[in-house]
Amino acid sequence: MSLAASFYSALSGLDTNSTAMQVVGDNIANQNTNGFKGSSVHFEDILGQSLASVSGNNATGVGAKVGSVDANFTQGTLMTTNVDTDLGVNGRGFFILRDTSSNEQYYSRDGHFHLDNNGYLINTGGNRVQGFLYNNTGTSMVSTLADIQVDQSGMVDPKVTTAVNMVLNLDASATAKTFSIANPGGTSEYSTALTIYDSLGKAHVITDYFTKTAAQTWQWNATIDGSDAQQGGTPGTPGTPVLFGSGTLTFDGTSGALTSSMPVTFYTGSGGTAITFADGIAASSINLDLTGTTQFGSSSAIQSVNQDGYAAGTISGISINTDGTIVGYYTNGQVKNNAQLILANFANLNGLVKSGTMLYRSSTRSGDPLYNKPGVGGMGAVSSGALEESNVDLAAEFIKMIISQRAYQANSKIISTTDDMLAQLLNVK
Image (tube, rainbow, N blue to C red; front, side, top):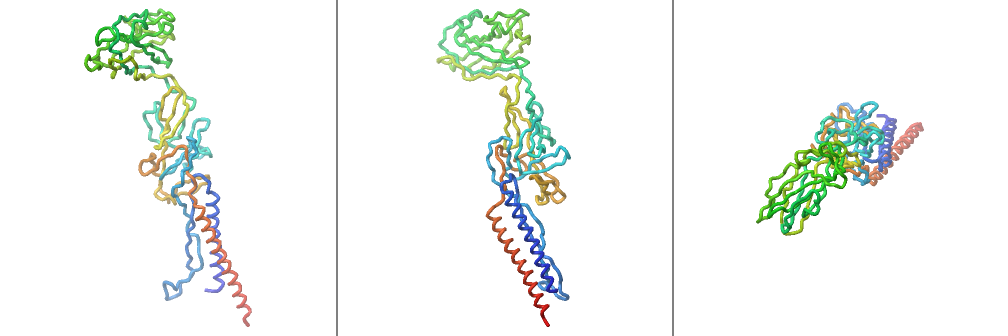
């Protein structure tokens, strides 16, 4: 090959090392970019000529070229932000996003998300995060990718109280009495208040009274203030209790355990006359379960009480679990699943196509996306309140920069040396 060919070999070296320096510069520039994956340049030699009748090391090369620029998809450090909608993937997988204008699907490791004014979970570019949605009750999930949306203005429907669970101890040494609705406090041993809800979610306060009537036998009576109840169309009198329900409890004289069958029907009304609340809503029957209640020789006291009704409520906040489940918390104390994030993975990560702003597109080289829930099928777990930092190693990039700089200088020297040699050749007489 001619001496001039060394010009082109050195020129290819300048080009390839310029590309290497460009990649190093891009890596360093994005050291603080969330979810950024650093790249490395891989060179290939160029075969210029193979001498006739020879093989192997006698082949002549004419420089180098860039074989590929491959991304390094190793895990980056998770940085705590304390913002619930900031998400990081600890392990394999990409967040799935949809461009609403083109309907194109993208993939990203950058989990800097927030809720827009319509409740959609989006990234900074407005692309909507994809996942599986739950039904209105948060009990069943539809396994079809859809835009994740948290309804911030809708209400959770109220639930009427249908069951009450109460555990207490009744003093075995109490004096037997006869309960009187006219004087419930003076004719009972112990009382406790309980809030229940009607079918529209309005709260009503009832009071349970417990009266010892004989050895190992107690009577319980529930009352509601007359200002909040009417019977047979006749309004009650404010300050005057109305009987809401009653029953009998029996205990074992040796163990003090409750022997009455539980639960019992907590009748709404007495004498066959149903209770209607003051707002016109008919009271519904309630099951009372006192399982665990005892009669010991200590002061009467309640250990626990709960009921299954609640008022209507609006969302007050959300949290995101490690499995990607987005949980809504409501002003009425209810907790409901809204959606679940889904992650994507690919057989060949280096086949992904960069689309800018930390987004990737799939290609024939990457293969079709493999969808799974976080923590399933080899996918990583989701960390809420954290973002994945860039995986760029600054020290390694500086070393690469020095090597590329020296290689560039060396190729420049080849050009100047070849020029000197050609000048000498031209001076031959």
